[in-house]
Image 1: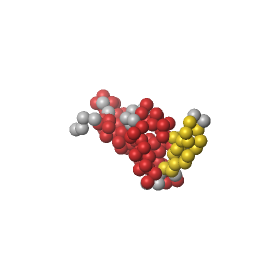
Image 2 (image 1 turned 180 degrees about the vertical axis):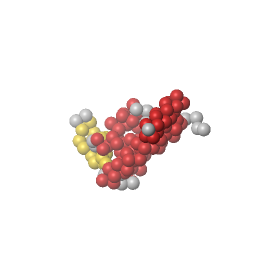
Image 3 (image 1 turned 90 degrees about the vertical axis):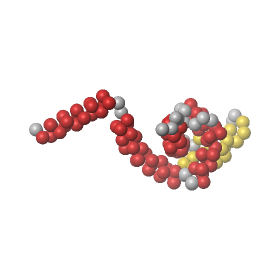
Image 4 (image 1 turned 90 degrees about the horizontal axis):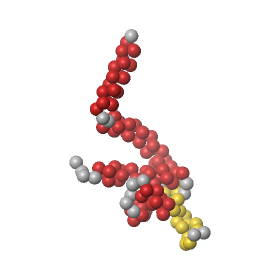
Length: 127
């Protein structure tokens, strides 16, 4: 097993987290970075820009410039129609996937409780 399981998990979902943030509202790079760093999904803003470039190349994200009251022009990112579809597909797959993983790795006592509930349901159904 790999020492840093968290890094592998983050790598698999961080791009979808970016799409999820952009589904809420267009954001500029620093906003995205602050949210993702605070949540422990990326290490630094340096990780974000190559990812945004990949998402733009894939047609999932577009960018536009907007004046800022606080300084230079900011580059904002937003979802494209393809990005909206990609995020919707991910959402459909994420819930059952994460539920399955949770079931497979849950603590033993919870597994025993789950099996007891299943037995009760079966007994009620046959009664």
